[in-house]
Length: 183
Ligand SMILES: Nc1ncnc2c1ncn2[C@@H]1O[C@H](COP(=O)(O)OP(=O)(O)OP(=O)(O)O)[C@@H](O)[C@H]1O
Ligand SMILES: [Mg+2]
Image (cartoon, rainbow, N blue to C red; front, top):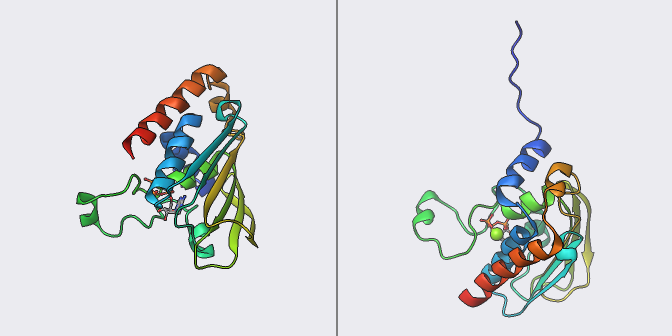
């Protein structure tokens, strides 16, 4: 008999891993708000459509990212918040795994616009199912704006098991209040 074990392609591994981080629209909002807070934002706008099932737009006035960091932020285990094992014992940020954006990018269509204060132009990225289809310079305010469209569009089983809009909206408000009250 021949051997039967194979390594999964990155895209499938990412999709499976994404399910651990993102269960519903509220998980996306939690992860993006955490990132905005970690980036030192003093103003964060949240715009959602159809309880986050159609789109989630989070805009912050935080540090923004360089073009290379913006691209790197979509890789799994890519983070600016942790460098060595000892750092795990002194975590001062909401995130540290380098998983969130890679997970969201694997199971939705995502558009990122970001600019640091010292940069003249910003970066615009479009990514679908972990594939970056556009990376270009753009005019945008300092900070980061991320739009997540059609969550689970490529994972029909998960999309089908999302609850009604009022239920998903309640989960979103719970996450929103939890983060808003703690900062
Ligand atoms: N709104 C933002 N403003 C500035 N930088 C950001 C923003 N969102 C993400 N980043 C950068 O992208 C990196 C990856 O983000 P991601 O959320 O995937 O991982 P993380 O926050 O480091 O860890 P975790 O997976 O636990 O959330 C971050 O470490 C940060 O450097
Ligand atoms: Mg994060």
